[in-house]
Image (cartoon, rainbow, N blue to C red; front, side, top):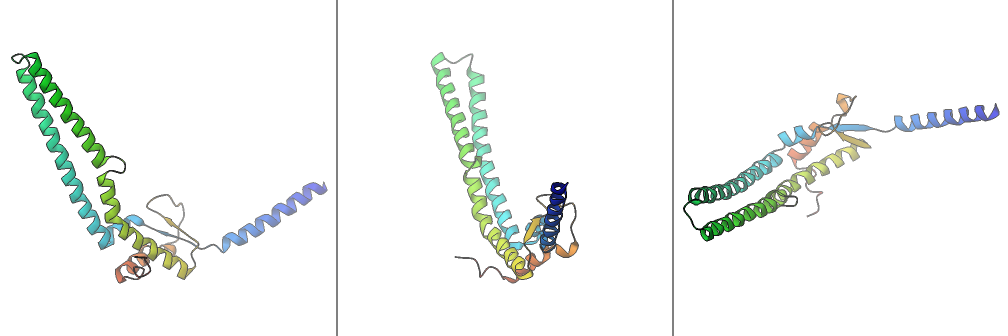
Length: 181
């Protein structure tokens, strides 16, 4: 019986201290989608990236059109050409297919030029956002800040929304000076 009482007392003390520690934790949240929508630097980077991606897509479509043309040419000549000419055209088609595969991988694959371009264009904006958020969290005593756009938050108080403060900090340029160059 004494062991049960001791366990209950220990559990009660643990719960009281953990509740006290939790009560002191200040938690905030932001909506990164709203920041991305309203932060002009990020919008500019996104537009530039979309232009680069559209150009890469157009270049790839051009290669596909060339492949279609080669295949149509081969299909038209398959009954009239010699076997060596057909083999040559098949080799040309295979070469074009390989070129398309390599181009697709180098451009759109993991670590490809599109990924690198996006990272290069958005990194500065992302750094500014993180710096502004870190400064606000430090100044106002937030221990954790969640991103409402990237996950779920079942309960949140409006006064803990730091989105507008981050946007204001980004607009006024505060936070940029803290970034290491």
